[in-house]
Length: 161
Image (cartoon, helix red, strand yellow):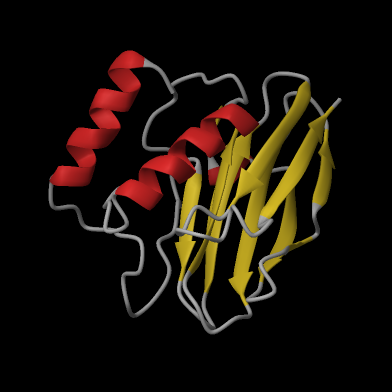
């Protein structure tokens, strides 16, 4: 996240939004791509074009299960994300540098409100979905950016071949 992206994220943090970290009552669900903007790690995927579903479990142990996922370049994956814990968790896809930067913003602005196609917020006992198309080969990551969770080791890796 650089320059304009950081400014946009800070503006979103100050604005009221429909979805928020810690929103009680359920999970946000990325059911359709909000934008097809290409990122370093791919773009929002069309759920109708998902070639497979990967189940991911979030827990209060501050770990993702699985912690490593392998996909093919060009593949569109639907992530079914279940929060098995008692705390709010989320799954945010990105580069490790982007996740670190976003985690720092979350520490500084813990009530930041935003909803992007590369993230899903999941309340305790709920399940949400995130669909992503991995257009570039490489190692990318997913993390829970609720303040303190990423720092506690709640991060996983996506290897795109």
